[in-house]
Length: 357
Image (tube, rainbow, N blue to C red; front, side, top):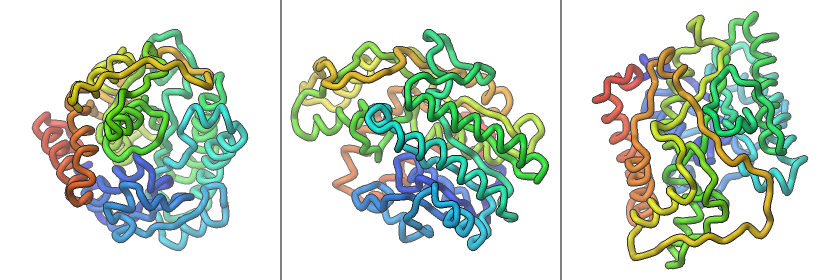
């Protein structure tokens, strides 16, 4: 898998105990990584990461990416070769309530990680995850990588800045030092193991467990809803190819096959999959905050340059997602996670995607 690049590698994942960090760690271990060093500011005892036992098969370090001494010590002590920087404050509503914390986490946290990499001789490559929010509001047109980054709300600004800072470190420091860096931009990532309140899938599942109708606050917002394993395969595909001239230093969008999915459409599909005659209801937000009405990404560059494409349709994504949320209390989480990952990888191999061979 991934041309064997990750076999025997020591990899640092920031935000490791989060939703995406957990699935990235599982995928790295399956791809043959020798060691995963995981950094997260919270231990999150009820997370997929802890409950599936990943803290027992990785080196988990509780700490903050803004701690420059800690970051450099981790990279040097463990002789880290590859870095995936996912740690961030990821919720738009929280950014609106706590702008300074969001700016410090998303901007300064990224800068500290990038600077530590610059001074760590063992690091060969780094992948930094930003967001489609970095583009700002384009009036609903597809985002392409060449678009200007101009977020306007606090969360989007923090992502624009983190992205631009990463570009600056790559251009000014990494290229001359032989470090290959890349940036990934994704839309709304969904899948099993996410427990962040305020996201539609998570809020719907919580309502389903309670036997009540989910509250959908902005039913007409349009987003790219993107399977977490599709996102992770994008991260890993980019990381494995970063030494190539057309790829090193670049930014890549990764997204789903189906665009223009309204929140109302997503909620309806989730209710149908759950069954039990539950329907969603529109409940206006108690605390309105700035949001971009429509966001959608073109992943044409990733397809043409990396031979990457999403594996699952939205319906397949939601089926696997609901399988996770139905099963997590009934079976061993490590087995559930691996079953879903193996199924996904098998499908990718049948589609002939380069990374799955």
